[in-house]
Every structure is written in structure tokens, then in C-alpha cells.
Image (cartoon, rainbow, N blue to C red):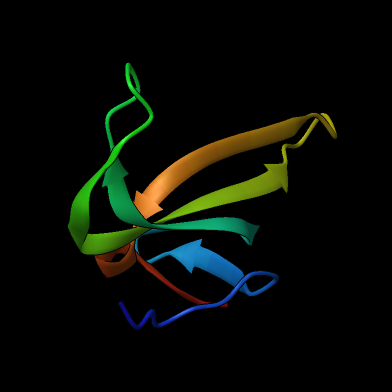
Length: 70
């Protein structure tokens, strides 16, 4: 599956918020109980990391459709 972004890209939610760095890209579904791959995701998901206003490391996963290059 082709993705719009790559590891290391700095992105932001389309609705605003902090700058975030992509660290992992998920393009396949997994069964977390068995570890088996269960097919491609309909839309890639990106695990991102950023520092908050208190300089604490935060992270989350977002779908491709809700982020953009900052």
C-alpha cells in the first residue's frame, strides 16, 4: 500500500495542534492475540510523537485523512 507520508515527516492535525513526527506507519491489520496479519487497512495509520507544553513526550495514532505536512 502506498502512503502519503513517510517516517520522519513532521505533520499536524488538519484541525490544528502541535507539530508531530511520524515514527511508525501501519498499513496492515493485525490480530493482536495471534500476531497474524489479517489484510490491508482501508487507510494507513500513522503513529506520531511530540512534546507537550511541559516538555513531556506524547504519542498517538492517526489516520492519513486527518493529518497534513506542517
